[in-house]
Amino acid sequence: MHERDKDEIRYHIDAFLRACIDKDWPAAGRGRADNWRGFSVCSPTVLQGGPGLVAEVKVMLETCNLVDYEMLEIDYVFHTTTCLVPYVARLRGRCSAGRLLEIKLRALDVYVNHAGNWLQAASSVSLHPDSMADPQLVALLLGLSEPAALTASL
Image 1 (cartoon, rainbow, N blue to C red):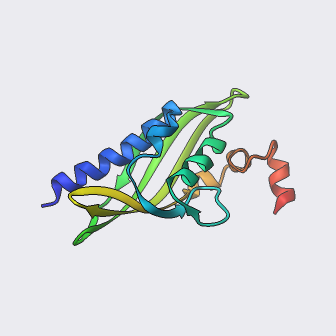
Image 2 (spheres, rainbow, N blue to C red; image 1 turned 60 degrees about the horizontal axis):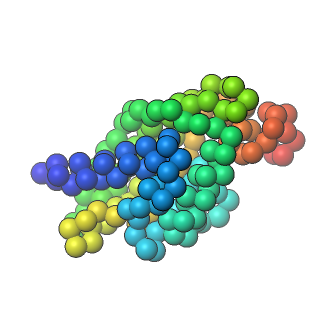
């Protein structure tokens, strides 16, 4: 039951992550409800609309190039025309300074079915505790040049 729905939702998540790797920003913006709301890893306020999400991700990946990702865990909880999708993903890449990058993210996406199509209505993405333990990674994602700047900003 719901296997086709799960496949469609997973395709959307994979397409978004692939678009981030390719830095294909128009593709990254597809598949969201018009009134989408959510948080990226670094957003201090609620993002409104897919373009807000894409702008945040674009800034975060300005100095880094992702090369691949791996879905570590995913689940689907259906409530009639709504589906909650918690997942954990690992992204790998390299930053302009040559530093290897590995980020584990936790996400909770909310999908709604409109006329037979699943659209992302909301999302909250945060760093996994494993990634939060790396001060250089956290500093990089926050746009700080050095881990010491992270300590100074807290």
